[in-house]
Image (cartoon, rainbow, N blue to C red; front, side, top):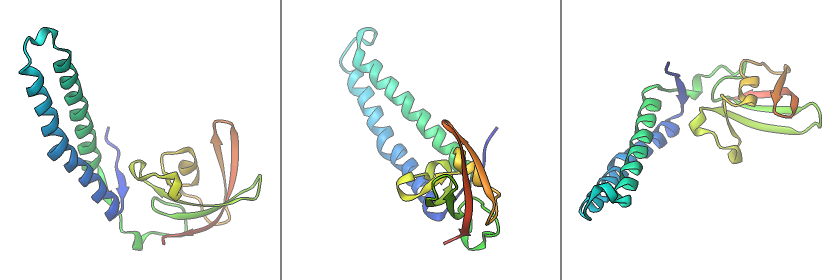
Length: 158
């Protein structure tokens, strides 16, 4: 079963660039490594050949997964997002009810997630817990060491 993911223009461009790098640069390198290993003689006892074939298989798997992700990717127009509730690509400011800390997150697709820049996946426990909530609502999020309560302070699309 395929899963649709929503991306910004930049997110889709990054995925396509990665796929092109794998196909246009890494794939020929893998083929060249196999050819060089094959030229070294008996394949039944050639560890270099086996390693090159395994690396090629992993590369092809990575390409296949990326192609599937791209085939299920949908471009989202951020200017038309509803800011009355938390959705994919919403910017959310939350307040931790336990310690009063304020945090800002942008909910994005799994492949765009980067906690350092405040981008969290909609598939993460926090992302799932925030989806669909409105300003003022409290989200109870189950994490490995218990439950965290986040109050939705604001929702924007900027």
